[in-house]
Image 1 (cartoon, one colour):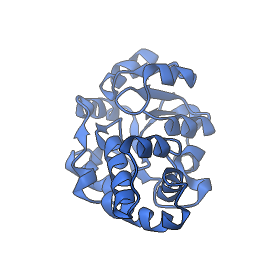
Image 2 (cartoon, one colour):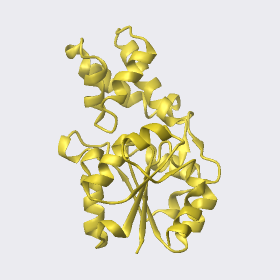
Image 3 (tube, rainbow, N blue to C red):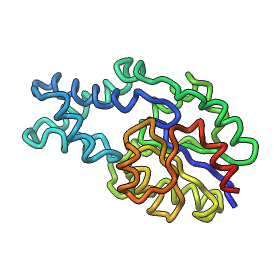
Amino acid sequence: MLRHIIFDCDGVLWHGTNEGYFLCYHRAALEAGIEMEFGLARERILQNWGQSARIEVEGMIPEFPDRIDEVTANYRRLVRSDLFLQTAAEVPGVHGCLAALARDHALSVITGMNGDNLPRLLGRFGMRDYFRHAISTADTEDPDKQKPTGYHLRRLLQFEGLDPQDVLCVGDATSDILMARSQSAPIVIVLTGHLTEAEARDHGIADILPSVAELPAWVQRRR
């Protein structure tokens, strides 16, 4: 029985912020005097998506190991600024989705967004009261506690006394798939973020929706 639905944020509840992260990483490198094309920075960041900021920076500038600390510090400042925050826009229909689902299910967030921006954007979009837990996976450098490992999902299951089949994960990226599969939890992928339908199917995902607005109807059919 489905009891708890766990959402990613970027590319699921709101969009635009995925590109905002890339803008901040690229600007952080430029401010450190590292000239690189935006497209290359984006491509390299995606190879470590869902890991800590430092790991993502290491992957972005492998030619400059001595600049990793500086670029990471620049990024952490920029991602808390309007350069990032102004990129966020609600996915159409998200409030209706959350209100409908909250009538019969507990809702939570597990996201790679940092712990400062998460409450800011949930508050800006009037979403905070929908969620029992709003968990950031970004505020640790421990590789065993990054989002794809499923550490935070496992903790939530334990805290709530849930079995994996009691929950549904909703995401847009490979890191969401890895998180769900680490705990044998089902997942729905929405197409408002990173993955295309073809890419999601290449990962073996059967349940794919155009956006989170379609989720209440999908849950009803699943019953």
